[in-house]
Image (tube, rainbow over all chains, first blue to last red; front, side, top):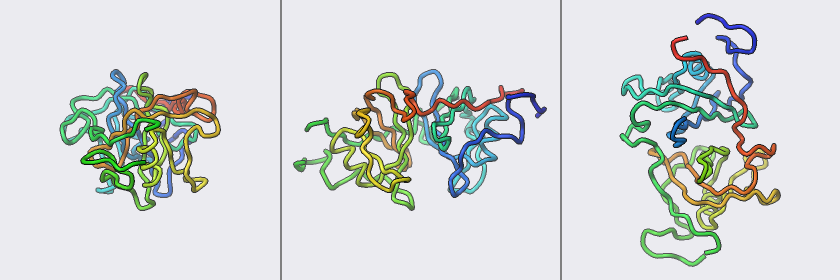
Length: 122
Length: 122
């Protein structure tokens, strides 16, 4: 990838986001159009750089201990529209165009298991 | 809180969500009406139980190592409409009615710092 000038992204340079003791940062993935929260995954410095450089999400698989391009085998890629860090710069919000379901179960979003909440004051 | 019957929530019992090695689970907080992702915070077993029982978000502050009822001092409470676990049951999505700004900076959402993303194929 060619280097870009000025404040634009340059390969090798990253905004100052904070990685945890394991070198990871939490990434919340949200569908850019529907605003549905699709999944949460983790990025290390390399996967964040690849995500910003390629425009497709790449995560760090904690179970497999390797880089993981989302949809590489399933075809359910996530094209990145925006990445935003939070106020502490230790969490990322990634807005994507999701192809197919985001969840390996076939659900559109990974968040499909409701927990019971009491009504306030009950 | 009185005990409830059957599959409803009972004080002391929790759905089988998975806490990490530090006893914490990641909680993504989303505004129920606007679908804006507001913040990410962490819950331990006690704060999750309090959240489900009271209908207001309670987190575990990793920096202060104590329970933290969101908005307790600022008044910017989060009334909980829904809590959903993800497919692995190791991350939570909390849908809330947010009073005032969610971020301590005064921003509505904590995610206000854009990172530069390359267009795919560039």
